[in-house]
Image (cartoon, rainbow, N blue to C red; front, side):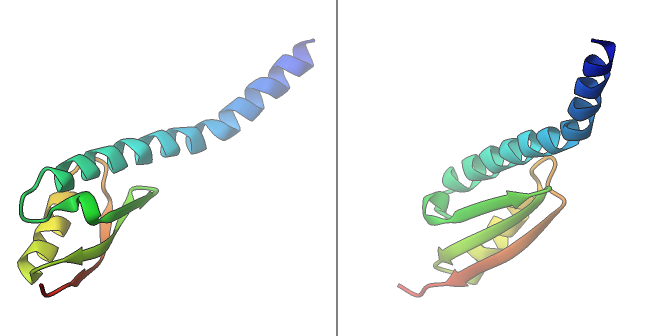
Length: 93
C-alpha cells in the first residue's frame, strides 16, 4: 500500500509542472484576448492568439502598422508573457 502511495505521489510530482504551465498559459491567453478585443484600434476579435510556455503568437490582420505594433506592445504587458511572436499582417481597406 505504501509503495502505491509513493508511486502515485511521484507521478503527481512529475506531472505537476506541466499542469501548472497549462493553467498559466490559459490565464495568459484569456488576459491577452481581453486586452486585444477591448481595444478599438486593434479590434482583436479577428486575431488569433496562441500561447505555449509563456510565448504568445499573434496572427491575423490589422489595418495599420501602428496597430500591429500596438497589439504586440499590449501583449508584452500581460503578466506571465515571456515573449511575443508577431505574425500580424497589414490589410489595407
